[in-house]
Structure formats: structure tokens, C-alpha cells
Image 1: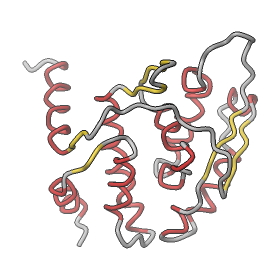
Image 2: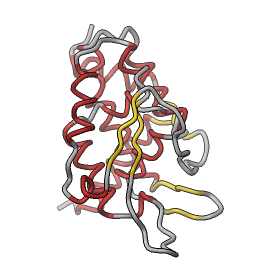
Image 3: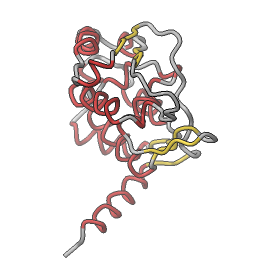
Image 4: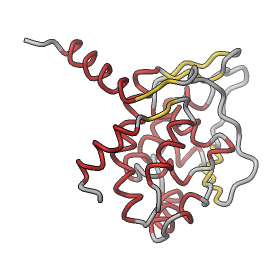
Length: 199
């Protein structure tokens, strides 16, 4: 029998064959200073897993088409009180991560609408992907977990982009992967396109 560890290793080897890793995936997500859509999230909302305000923004975006979604540049202002001397980054706080996971479960396409330039995509990924935070390098993602996350996002987001009239959905996904230092092979998109029956 093939063990679980062997299955994981073979899966990761296959996924990695579709990706070219350009450089180390690391960096501290910037705190957004300006975006078209700001969503304030209180500590109570975090503890209650209340994504109501974010849901309202997401539902408005779902009614839009094409580049309007990408240009929304959504950002989150997370309000979580920490004790003096608490060195943890937001992505190291379980309650904050759980809130992001709750949101991602309902709106898996949301990374497309985030303010990438201000670090919102990097922070979003840090909430969903195992990582370590160091003073020297900032956020350092677990590379295998990140590859799985990016691959899953491509499968989830691509049909959503096509339905909303994005002219070049593959380019959006390539740009998203490049934010983490990955170049996606064109053959991967050809295979995925056939699986979705996209013409």
C-alpha cells in the first residue's frame, strides 16, 4: 500500500513540475494606506467569525464584470487588541486567521479583488497558508503549502473569472502567482482549460 506521506510527496512533485520558482517566497505584507474599498473588522467580529461587512462588499463585487472586480482594491483594517509586549503578527493570532479562513471559505475568489500593491494579497495568504515570521525576513511561507494553495486558487478562481467576462483570466492568475515568486507553465493552463471545457 502507498502511504499517505508518499502520496503527498508525489502530489507535490507533480504540482512543482508545473511551476517555476523564481525566488524565495518571503516578505512582510505592507499595511494598506489607501484602497478603493476598506473593510474595518472589529475584535468582536473576529471572535464571532462575523464576516457580514466583508460579505456586503463581496456581494457587490459579484454583481460586477471584468476589470471592475480587479480594480476594487479591497483592504481590511483589522482591530485586535494585543497585550503590551505581545510580539505576534496578525497572521500568528488564531482568532484572526480563523476569521480569514471563514471569509475565504465563502468567497474563494476574493484574492482577485484585494489591493495587491499594498500587501493585502500577501497578508491574506499568510492567514490561509502555514508560515513563519522572522524579524529579518518577515513572512516566510511554507513552500509546499503555498504551492497547494496557489494551485487550488487557480482551479477555484478561473471559472469565476470566465463567468464574469475577464478577457484574459489566465493572466490574472499568472500575475497572482508571480506575487509569490512563481511562474506558471503554459502547459498547466492548457490542461486546466481542457478540464473546464473552456474554448
